[in-house]
Amino acid sequence: MKTQQEIKNRQEIFLNSYNPMRSEERAVQSGINAAIRFAHAYTPGMTYQQKIEIKKYWGKILKNFGEKYKKVRTEREFLDDITSIVALMNEKFYNDFIYNEYHKGFRIAQAQKSLSVYLKHMWCMGKTEIPPVCPIDRTILGETWIYDDLEMYKNHLCCVKKKNNTDNPMSVWELFEFYR
Image (cartoon, rainbow, N blue to C red; front, side):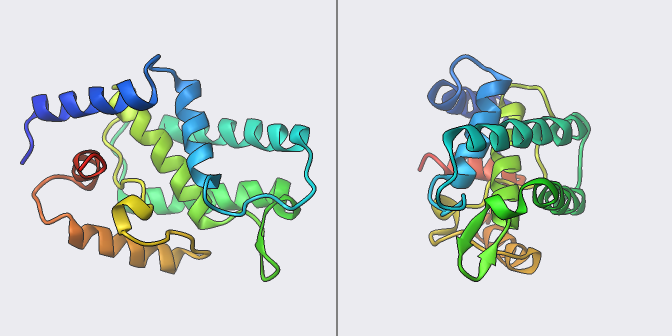
């Protein structure tokens, strides 16, 4: 089990690398960018201004959901939250997201990655409690993290839990694993 001081030191290393100004806006930006970095996200032909509008709305959603994590939340609540984020984004921007000709709309993968990265930043800054799950991505899984439904995400989550062969919560384990 990692000590509080070891965790605090690792959080500082993370923040110094990814959010040196300790800014919530940077946390939002990092969450969104992580969710779209390696995935075909937007429908081809979208303008820069359209993408800005989407990111502004997406950022508001992350901040609103992030408020809940000032108190300890469960994995089940996190799953409900990412499902709600997908619904909110698709309600307003369904036609603006496309993975390929068969997969249209905002996906669970984008919701989980954006919320979990945002929460990681906020937790490291001491603004929320420890997130119930960690960001699930290629670094942690060792494989692609693109998926379209909650069941596939739960399968990836189970794989990550098996990799965490420590007594540490998943978010603590990932914080150290991320820099190996």
